[in-house]
Amino acid sequence: MQVGDVVLSVVLDELDKKVLHEICRGIYSYDDLAKTLNVTRGTVYRRIEKLEKNNIIEKKIMAIPNYKTLNPSAISIGMEVAYDDTEKVIEALKQLPHVKLLWKCYGAYNVVAVLVCDKGSEGETITNLRQLLSTFRISEYHVSVGFDWDKVDIAPY
Image (cartoon, rainbow, N blue to C red):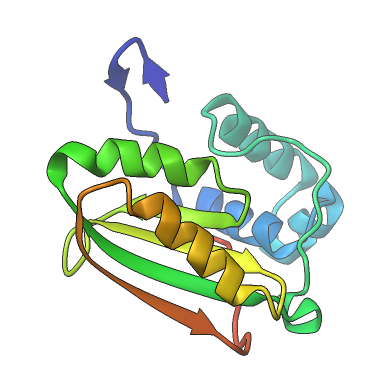
């Protein structure tokens, strides 16, 4: 949660984490959640309200696609971006519709992105990405193309 320029940490207990995990897996009715978590419907309702109030989740109509069935290509890229260009690279990558996951990190790379595209368009997607990245100071990057989906779990816990 953010108040002005100060970011406040939201403490999630084990039940909050379980609720978050289950709704990310696709359980969406309060009754189903209550049954799965062995709590009352009211408890589930209060926990979801808490998660919404603290901007952990948003209520939206969403679907969780079956990536194994759809079988698109995933492209992961790890980049070592010059410190002064990091925010610019992040902002540029945020604008690309193929970019699905993006984070700053420590380790071999300081920016990592995962893109998803249709099978057969990997080359074009990588070429467009390289063209965009050529305008920034990136000392190193590695690109990997995934060809089979073995696990997709978007739940953080």
